[in-house]
Image 1 (cartoon, rainbow, N blue to C red):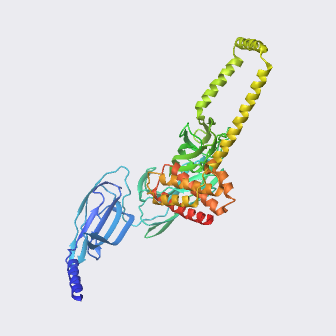
Image 2 (cartoon, one colour; image 1 turned 90 degrees about the vertical axis):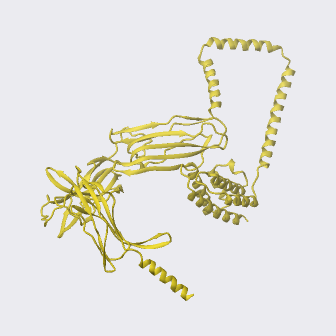
Length: 565
């Protein structure tokens, strides 16, 4: 056995030692413009000091990496040593990058060469300059705070950033950020491109500028907001320090004149849309009303719109909020959606009155109010009733001659009925009363039979349902698991309160459960119902979230069934 292991080790050593040493240069792009960011990568399968000279007119950037890693190919492990450096060219022309050199086993290994073509760019990055720099005056090196606006309304976004100006290029610096005095919402606007110097001509003078620390500010209160200076240190033979000037921003309060009652602080430019999923719904069916706000501004401050429902409808669960917006230099841009699950509790026509929504537009300096349309639910019966009502109104408000005709007809019929026997009238009266009494007793009897027929699930049935749910596969495209979980939770509640869960709303249910469960268990039920609603009525359906709900459901059911037993 020892001989076998020794033989294997010798073979592996030979394979490793037999590996040819190599070094390679790669460039991210070989046809670029002046100032365009490129990355130069050097990799080698041999350790040692890499000797490499960057080409003339190449300005190094701030992204530099060096180290080693393991690569696996066809079951073999190879150690790779690498070195990367980003940067840009400051002059147009044709450049040859390489070779890079590395010593291995007493030999010098050379890499390949890479040719790069650099074209002219109107807005070029700074050129390199040689010599010692004398940074003495503010005109040579200074900083300032840029603000997109000097005067805004409450809630209106402001873009702030620090900007450095220098007549000479620099690569090493230290930065102490500015600060803001005033109550506001502050969001950092991250850049997807690396920081780099840019050459600008300002008043006939060439400057190398650097922009950083960009933030989007939403003032909350009116008043004077002060932006305190930032500090910048650059290192060129010694440390040079510059401070920006302080800046003030005037924040005006929103006008009180013509402010609509529905205004909740939304500032920007928006469009509204209100949609109902279904205008026909059966008793206990759940439909959805969706309110969408699309635009740009302080969308993160939007609140749930007020919804007034008639007695035939009730809010089945808390509204589901779906945020689909992102921060930009002009504020939050995108779409915000509120979805209301609504349950039909009375089988009769109903209407949802118009929803009022509003915002303040700082460009026009006016409030904008939007009213949705009236949504009629199960309105077929309502149309018939409306037609009957209209006919009655026509009769009462129209030509009175028709009414006189009907009155005369009635009088004539009354005269014809004067000869009817009183015995017949009494017989008809008692018969009508008997029929009404019989109808009342029959309704009472059927109501009791219906109550008797209400099925209250047993613990065994609940355990069977839990087992079936546990065996159901989870799919990100289907909410079958969530429907079954909600059904099982409803049956568990029916078991505790002793009546069918479908006859009570959720709020009534939580009150009835106080006699059987503690507050912690009821809160657990609430949370689970709300999470199910969010994932059933929102557009996103994740397998991961379904699995989490399924695990929490099993834990809660085990605890509640244990208490009941």
